[in-house]
Length: 175
Image (cartoon, rainbow, N blue to C red):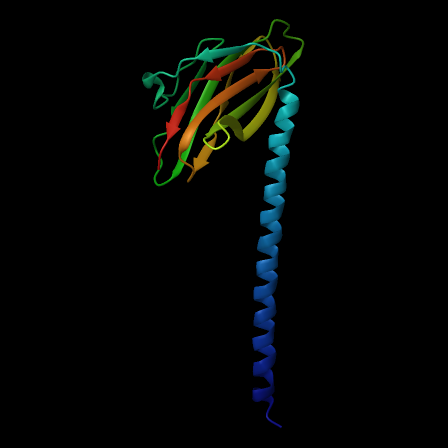
């Protein structure tokens, strides 16, 4: 009997099993991340319960791109600026606003929505969402969404649980 020749097929079939397990693990991880992303986007609907609230349009100025550290927006405004230290088609942006809290003992919840213009649907659609909250008088809030390989027109909406809705002007992302 030749022990060496009987070991080779076992090693080859074991390597094939390892590759199959790796592919299955990657598929499961991708599915899990997709479910988490859709759950975060649907959770934003709860943060925007103030559907009938008036929308305030905020001007996005050229001076806000790129965002410089130490720049604090005025209360009731939203600033959007590109973070310039990037290469390729991954475009991170810094979005900032100041939220006033009339009752420092009460928690303020707020939600960000990055919306992309749909040419086919002729409407703004949620591209990415996030939310948070704080307790205290007022706070400068910040969000850094990243747009990867998806050029188009975007805008940012900030909804505060008190009913305030702030809306940036649209901005174009190109790659």
